[in-house]
Image (cartoon, rainbow over the protein chains, first blue to last red):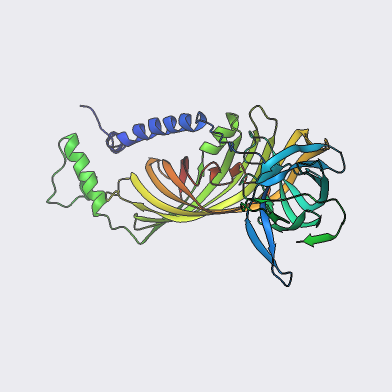
Amino acid sequence: MSHTSLHDILDRRRPACRLLARAATAMLMLALTACDDVTCPLNNTVESIYNFYASARTEDGTFVEGQAIGVGDTITIVAIDTAEIYINKLYNADNCKLPVSFYRPADSLRWVFTDSKGATASDTIVIFKTSHHHFDDPSCPVHIWHHIDSIAFTDNVIDTIIIASPEVNYDGLENFKIYFRTNQSSDEEQTTDADDDTGSDDDTQS
Amino acid sequence: MAAAMPATAQTPKTEGEAVEAVTDALQARKVRFFNGAGVGIDLVGPVMKVAGSDWSQLEVLARINLLDKYFPIVELGLGSADHEGREIDNHFSVRAPYFRVGADYNFNKKHNGNRLFLGLRYGFSAYDYNLDSPVPLEDPVWHEKQELSLHDLHGSSHFAEIVIGLETKLWKIVRLGWDVRFKFLLKQNSAENGDPWYIPGYGKNSSTLTWGGSFKLLFDI
C-alpha cells in the first residue's frame, strides 16, 4: 500500500508553482531582450528666427506695431567677429533664420541693406544670450540651446526689435520681430528702402 | 491526524477525500487580523546586472499581512545605469536610491499558500545624472570646441504602478512570486539640459507609460 504524505498532497495542489516558474523565466527573457527604442527629434535645427514688420509712428513719435512685410532691398548678414557671411543678398524676404554661436556670450551681426540703385545702409545687431547643452537621448546628437537675455541695435534702417520668444531651440518659434522704417508706395506695397548709413543710434531691448 | 478529528468525522479513504479534508481544515482556521509580516528581494535586478544590462536595480521589500487579504508594502531599491549611445559615444550614468509604498489585495479566498494580487504603488526617486562624450562639441560657424561633460544634473520623479502578480509558498517560510507592473510617470523634474535616460525605480525614461516586473523571493517572519 502506497503512503501519501501531506506534503505530496499539497504539492500536487500547486500546479501554479510550475506555471509560475515558467512565466517568470519567460518574463526574465523578455526583460533582457526588450527592444531599445531611440526617438531622436526629426526637427533638430537650432536657429534664431527673425520675422520682418513695418513700423509706424504716431504724430508724437510713439511706436506702433505694423504688419508683416517683405523687404525690397537685398539683405546681407555678416558675423562681425569672423566676417563670415550668414546670408548673402536675401531679396524680398519676410523672414530669415540665423545660427547662434555655441559658446560666446554675445553675437554681433552686421545687416547690410542694398537698394535697387546700389545704395547701401547697415545696422548692427548684438544679441546677448546664455547657452547650454541640450540632449534628448544618449544616442542622439547633443545640441546647444540658447536663451536671449537682451538685444542691442543701431536704428538706421531698423526702427526697433522686439524679442518675441527668448528661447532658441527646436520649437521653431519666432524669436525676433524686426520693425523696419518704411516708405509707403502709391500701390501700398510695403517695402523698406535703404538710406545712407548716416547714424548709429543704439537701442537696447531686453 | 485522524485522532485529532471529531469523532463523527470519517477517516479519508481516497486521496481526493484527503485533499478535501485538509482544505476544509485550512479554511476553517480563523485568519487573524495581523497575520504576520514578510521581507523579500527582487531577483530580476541582480540577474540583469550579471547579464550585462546597461541598467538594473537592487531592491528589497517589507510588508505586513492583514487577514491574508491586504498587504501594505514598502519597497526600497538602488537603481543604476551606465549606457552608451548607439553610433554616438555619449555616455549616460546615474546611481540613486528610490522607494515605493502601496498595498496588494489578495483575490484568492482560500488560505492555501497561493496568492493572486492586484496592487498599487506610489514611487519617488531623487537623483543626480551625468552625460559625457569623448568628442568635444564644435561650433560649426565659430569653430570653437568645448568638452561635453555634464555632471550632477539634478532631477526627481514621481510615478505610480498598477501591479498584477502571483505568489506561492515553496517551503515553510519561503515564498516565490512574480508580478507585472504598468508604470505611469506622474511628474518629472529635470535639469534644463535634458531628461535622464533612466529613472531609478521607474525604468527607461522613454515614455510616460511603460511596464516592468519583478521576480521575488520572500520570507515570512
